[in-house]
Length: 392
Ligand code: ADP
Image 1 (cartoon, rainbow, N blue to C red):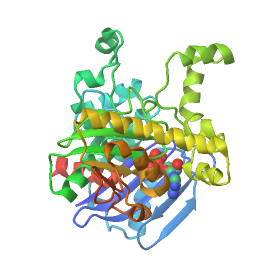
Image 2: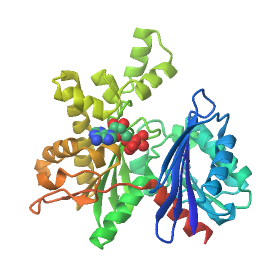
Image 3: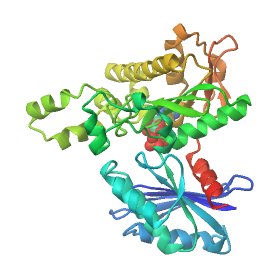
């Protein structure tokens, strides 16, 4: 079976065409700056990489080019070879706790949930509509970022605010990166050949979240009503005291929207370091003696460790701590700092094992009370696996 996994953003469209018989990525790539000057696309697989400047007026034109190229490059001989398309959809509200085949009703719901994810769901809808036009007879599946977290209990997902905010307007914790946390939990279960495990999954990318998983189910997660909550991130603040918002509005004469924008785009690593949202730049400046960068790294480590410690207690102990995504997979220094900060829980790093990056690997020493692992996450594969399950 050949499955296309899609992640559509407001001005980008990422895709992977995966042969599910051997999990080979036949073609992957990204269309960037859709509808903006300087649009381009990159297509690659194990044999080649093409980057092309091309006018992309909208998602429809990006998908049209993708469909042309995929046969032109002889990746497949006919578009009918694509058995299904899996779309990453950020918000499924509390209606979808699993991936689903996209029907008119499902699409309507995804549009309706735009209220809860105004930056993401409308973009996901664009991707769905563009593929529906290009391949009208190919089944499509929605894989929700929120779905994995739907197993949280009410006491874990409610905020201590007037309960009618929840009852009337769905104000609650949803959690995100569910596809990645689910993949990580599955991989660890496979590696350990065991389902009843207590896992703390740390997806540390430009956006980041930590999730507590018991017996394969999410019991708590750091992101909240939106992906702004939780740990410190590239340019997002993570948790702050909400009273800061009206205070800053008054001091700087900003609107609520402008302050939320600052919390989403000008905070986190960028806000503290005043250098970059990219941890690589911050670490480089830190190595040159930049104190704000060093502070940013310490604050990030602390914010992750706080959640791990909380979840350790919530889970009644922990078997595996997993590190994934941009920082988690590629940065041994930050991983080491996190592991060292967890000494009170009996975590002991294996310095040598931790020095290799980008590899699925155990990075804690044999004497460590909790195993620590790097698990390169694969959201596309997870999306494709769910798609196969549903269209079979
Ligand atoms: P996203 O959250 O956008 O999906 P990724 O999971 O790919 O992103 O993470 C991207 C981030 O990972 C970059 O912004 C950068 O901060 C971080 N990153 C990537 N490689 C490294 C590295 N070698 N060292 C430190 N940070 C890294």
